[in-house]
Length: 582
Image (cartoon, rainbow, N blue to C red):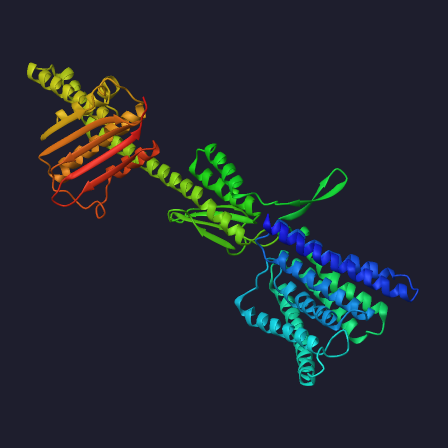
């Protein structure tokens, strides 16, 4: 709100000063019985473009310095014009006319040097231009101070005793003006070089600005070398005051540099502001898209598509740490912006904008998208690990069937064929019967490894107790009262059962435990399992978790988690949990 007020005051002051100059000029021409020339009205219309454009940019994009630069430039133009008009009247005191008329030197310097140099965001193109900016600023200050000392606009110094100051002022004005012209030409050459080296879209933008600077400089030449031609002087002022605002306005709107464009409603043209979606809008749309896209690869594509659409980039990509890359659009050339994904899981890249250039606000938007991108990458990695684990489990079951039960069934069939052809003795039939019972037991054991029937029939507590009852070490199983009769979703019970199963198996195979404690509980909407042993322990940071890593992914997929607390010589404690309200 304060920025709008300040911008309004500056724009109003500049516009009022420009109009006041026309009033003063009309009074001067009226004193000679001459009507105000049409060129003065043309000049006023051209000059008013500068405060209007500055106000528009400063109110719509107050965080950028460029709109404020245009407003200050417009204010100096208006005040300088008032000083010039008062000097022609010859009625105002010198202490008022000289400072006001001298301010035109500030306008010329800002208009020819800093307005094109800082286009479009109010920043230097690079650090190398800092010295150029400082020299230009000093030259403008010397020119203005010299004009004040020599009494510009009145033809006499401000002080009668300061002939030395008047001489100093003459030198200062001459050196400052000459340096300002030189720096303006250097800046124009630098603008042309930026135009030649820029990409196709940026080249068009710089072409407009370079053309506007050229016209404005030609206007300055016309005033400097042909001051006796009134028509040429007025046209020169029109070129100086109006050329750059016109090309800046056209460039900003045509190429939507500051998120300002033109829309058509019916038969009318309208300016459209804030064309760029906000961060909240992008995140909201992306969240909905990710919810509707279950496949991880498609989720990464949705993230890349959201980046491309929000930044209006030619292409966008999401790259994982393992090198997996999803690109939306046609990639040509290196990335213009790169932001690491939340959690260090990869990065988001995007190419140049189709229209305009990428700015700081685009980087902030890209950094905001890094969080959902990280979640999508985590989801993709989790699903990939689960798929790999399922494939490994399928191969394990296939191998167990092939190497175990299948061979036993082949041997049993061969024995039955032999018994049929030779006449089976009682001992052979007893052997075949025992072999069939063993095969059945092995099949049951294999089925229990896939999904034990006791888990489906009796629930989690009973299945864990049945599993632990067959362990060769002392094992205690405790549970919350009432948990034995409670049932949960199949995927929840299965995940917790196999987590406990893997934990006790690790305690037997790797830890050399003598006692194992299992605790099942349900509180706060979470089903928990704790497995502790008195084995030799290990360093979790230095040891691969193998089977528990797969189960941890399985719990993560259900919204749960798994923690290990262990150290060498102090046993191991595993805590697992999943959301369960049943």
